[in-house]
Image 1 (cartoon, rainbow, N blue to C red):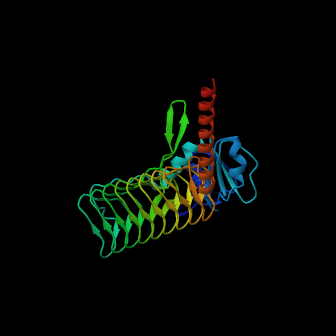
Image 2 (cartoon, rainbow, N blue to C red; image 1 turned 180 degrees about the horizontal axis):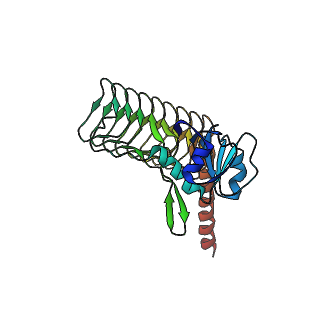
Image 3 (cartoon, rainbow, N blue to C red; image 1 turned 90 degrees about the vertical axis):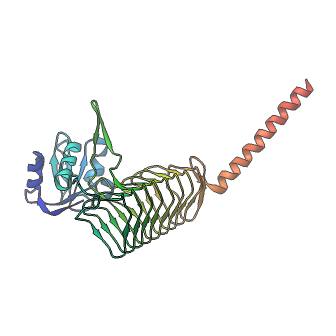
Length: 316
């Protein structure tokens, strides 16, 4: 998430009442999670295991819970609770904006777009030309939708990401300040849920077609011309290439990459990166040809065992 203007390190430190290391005029442009940070961003870290990763990331401001050596060209914000203060900064610049009407006055809706009764369009939403938004669709704040998009009834775009920090008292929520971006010529089926990015964007590429009852987690990026069947569940921070096919009830773990033109067969569980142009099957998913060979070998072993068992009884 980028701020409306560039702020100084001192301004941000004052906002969260923290110490800082670096020039007080050091520029701060936004904040982001570690996997999407850019120069000018704040990233937070609160565990020694991840200090080096954060300090060596593209982020130029590190919100950290210990005074450490500051890398050249960067600045530090010292906090007793970086998670809490990261949320505080995000909410200061982009807190939830309440709507009191079904289509916000701040929404921009393109020529030829039709919105069926009962749909909700939130604050600062942008919808392109010649779209069809069916009844009871909910499009959350800051969502961006391209041209020629169809969204079927019951779908929710822009719900909060599923991101919590466990405390002794329960779970603290990392409140989402990102959005959802839908490309051109996309169709999304009924009762799908596409969560907004925590700090950046959840994206669906041009020409992708989605069936009913699909979950897409926060900050996931789906490429162009993908085909996704019913009841697929995609966790957060997944990268899916172009022309990927996911058949029914596929489950995908967070933080992995699926390359272009991959096919994942029904009811597979994907827990690792998948290579371009290959077909996968099983849970955990393996290359389909290898999985079928394993299944055939298992059947041969079972039949051989049953045969030997039967012969043993006959001989007795």
